[in-house]
Image (cartoon, rainbow, N blue to C red; front, side, top):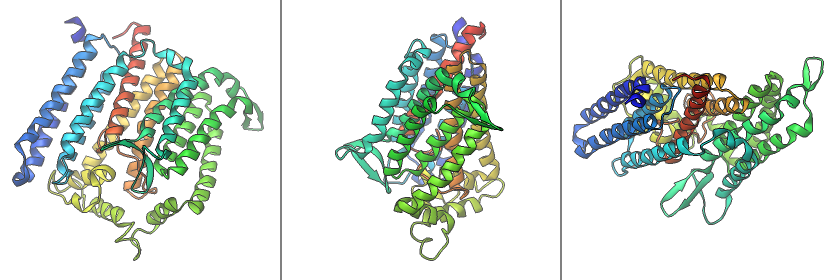
Amino acid sequence: MTLLLRRRSEVGLIVWVAALAITGSVAVAAADAAAFDRRQIFIPVAFIALMLALHLFLASRGVRGDQLLFPLAAGLSALGLILVQRLQPADQPLLLQQLTWMIVAAGAFAATILIPRDLTALARFKWTWAILGLVLLISPLLPVIGREINGARIWIGVSRFNFEPWEAVKILLVVFFAAYLEEFREVITHSRRIGPFPIPPVPYLLPILAMWAMAMVVVIFEKDLGAALLFLGIFLAMLYLATGEAFYTLIGLALLAVGGFAVYQLIGHVHVRIDTWLQPFSEELRFGAGYQIVQGLFALGNAGLFGAGLGNGMPDRIPIVWSDFVFNAFAEETGFAGALILLALYLLFFYRGMLIAVRAPTPFLQLLAGGLSFIVAFQTLVIVGGNARLIPLTGVTLPFVAYGGSSLVTNWMLVALLMRVSDVTARVRGTE
């Protein structure tokens, strides 16, 4: 009983998540009563039971530390189920599939809480994670299991089962970067300077630069602009966290500009993406490659302050809305007020993650938690920026909310790792 009381704040927040799941599902059903399947009420009930089971699991394991991160992830996932229920086509059972992936994600979350017993042991196998990450990155290029979908070869699949390896790779690379930068941060930080500019010792930066470069090359061949932006963002963020040198970030952004121009000139798929971003309303694009983003912008334009109401918009005009433009669909039906609340939840998630990073007792755990937090932040910025036409549209999905199993599973593993870091900190400090 004492163990259960330790996480009483968490269970109180899960009650609010349960209320969101039920009321959201009922609101969607009420908006289109003719299409409502009574079996759909099973989905939010099963989800609530799953979240309560995970809470009891955390309490029984004596997990200490942050009690807001898990309810935040649960709330975003509940919103994801509501939106999949709202947006799924009549001939595709996406809601049931998303619940199935949520169950898999819960299993992955529990496994990550249990294994490894010593979280700092991950640092000893940094090159193992690096090699495994590269193997996973290369796997979609293989002729038997690799699959190209919507112009990007980022999938591996067997029969009807598809998985995006780069979703797992982003976590593996964060673990590698954290371990490597912890080992050599003093050497890299205390580099000689020419005026205000640091000149790092190349031999120590070379392995991490090589890892990043190989990841970039593979991503370019797989035609996945979103993963390239995400990897670069994670790399620069963790380098800044380790060294405190903004100069490295500026150099990275300059390299991004040069590399982006080269990729635009050389790769047709990226060329189309950029042209579609710059002029989606042009005569030759608005009913072709630009149709999706044009309809997405119309949805944002119709949002108003409070939107049309859940279930009362017209998001079905946007192709693949449940995956690529779920933010626009949500904004259209809940207005800019709802969109701002959603973004505030992501900001709160990032804040709690960085708070865990700042309080962590070792440099490795600090860098690990910081890198994991930046994954969610960058992924959110990239997809929302693409949906709002601030940057080119990419294949990145909105964390926890958009339809997709690969992203959901790895994001819940990410939450588990952050909670593990918070637990270690609480035990070291002797707090709850």
